[in-house]
Image 1 (cartoon, rainbow, N blue to C red):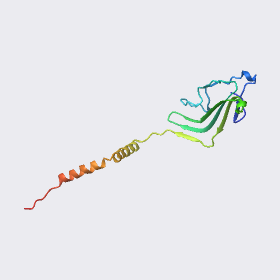
Image 2 (tube, helix red, strand yellow):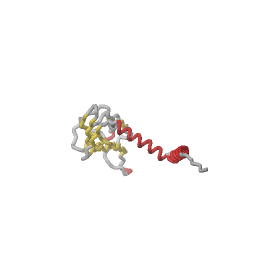
Image 3 (spheres, rainbow, N blue to C red):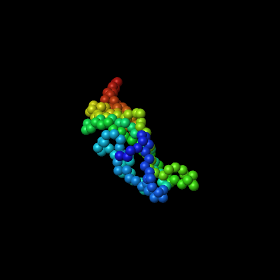
Image 4 (cartoon, helix red, strand yellow):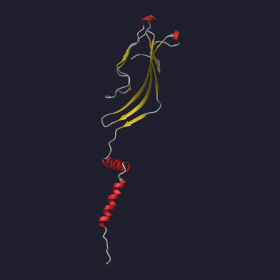
Length: 162
């Protein structure tokens, strides 16, 4: 754990500027309760700095999440990340401070994920809807009408007047 002010963390070496090397690896980063089998976006991220004046930025949006499945229930957080890296060269107009920067924002919305199984009757109704959609889109109705017409013609009795 790295002590840092709320909402913004700067990791920078307090050594000679020429000896900076901001190559890094993020083995695991998560917010909230650890949920097994969930892979977080930054897990295993590795960046190699090609210049001592390189800036790595991570913009993280954290969303509170309630997870309810048949196996686990957890109050945790999901997050998305936008990564940016660039070389700082003041002579070329690229200004900034070299280092690793993580900026995170907490969402005011909460996501609830609930696992539910579909009853058999609902599955059957959906299956009938799919089959009906296939019949109507493949234009099988004229075939059905011609079969009905032939059946009607075969069952009609003809009356002859002599």
